[in-house]
Image (tube, rainbow, N blue to C red; front, side, top):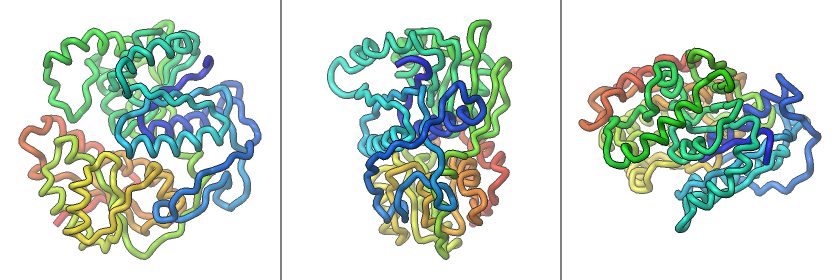
Length: 382
């Protein structure tokens, strides 16, 4: 494993690595080589989740060039079943593109961390470019202590990219926006790892740093920003069949301790009634208990997609209006669904919905996510 080496821990990260590879191959052919597609068997995706067959075809149904060599993706597999299932589906899509995928059970079993570090040490040192999906990940930060790459690319893993760019520009330590920033025993032990990782994610005389994003990001000094317009997704899937009603997009803000669960349920109920929504696309981290309450108390059909929502929406069927709370999808869905006629609307988080112990930065950060989504319609909640 040499050349281009990517580390991913979520389905969205792997999707955005595919988008980066597609963009890189078009803009700089020597960096990644496009090759003809190879016939591979695709596992059917349930029609209830996607609404159509798979296949390497563009919007018109004609074959499109596929296959990207020179890139190896290492999946640092999480433990929750929903994430693992989506990652396995995304891994197959990546293999269909000609990308080498190595599945690493990095969190399962005694000694998994030590075994993973030992297996990845050599390819890490040999890599010319490293692509990561989550600079806040403790696992990735630990891996970064093993090497000093000459080229680093950070791809989106949700709205955290905005906070990463801001913290990098200010020279701050890397802390997720929804955490209160406490310095407990675990944080103190990991502080040297985080500090070293931050240095290796910063541009310098011997290192270039690129951020590949669909979000509005101000480039930190010395970095470059490459726009992600979901060209790979649009070339491979869709256009979708549109339904008459609206669809709601779920969020894990309750699970991360930001939003009160009762307030969230009330908001979902009002939005569903107001916009005539019939389906609720669940976030992969939403709890089964919360989703059961939503289904019972609102009558919405809860759909647990087995691929990232951008792919599900692009393949359809999808509502003519998609309503979401502030999250990455209010930036990504308008790009993935460009030209389809789907309207994406965002409902802001009211201050009274926040939990008492939510991070002081939560309200401002979520307002910024919604306010910078220029391709969406803003909703008045009531």
